[in-house]
Image (spheres, one colour):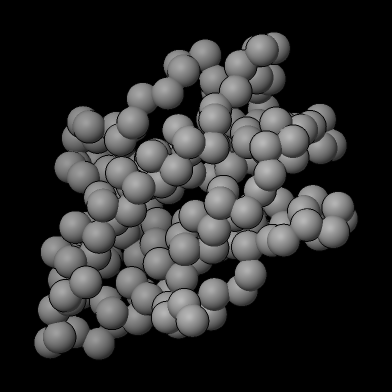
Length: 173
């Protein structure tokens, strides 16, 4: 990704955010289907991931009026918030989640490539004027990592591979 080299904060924010995002993508890859569709503490594993991805998509809308959201409409009966129950028999496949993650990665890549430092203090989008773009970047990085930790705990508890720590955009060997 090519970033505006005249800034000092944007490449750092981008690298930190995408390190977390890479771990989220890895989580979907390493999770076996029986765990993906399993229920832990009354929450399906796939739903924990969907909740995370949905809100990344939500907070990084591509325009100020919120059009073009969500990036990939999934079953509208699946609520993104944990406060509401998922109707029985509904789920999102890992294949669909991978496609959703890829669309959001493309959107985020374009967003980070166009950000200037002056944009960081502007509202993330019109419907949430009190939340700056910088707030959204930090809060979603924390949100991703919180949920990865929760899901990794489930995988670890079953002696399964997890989304390993991806500290700072290392190259895969």
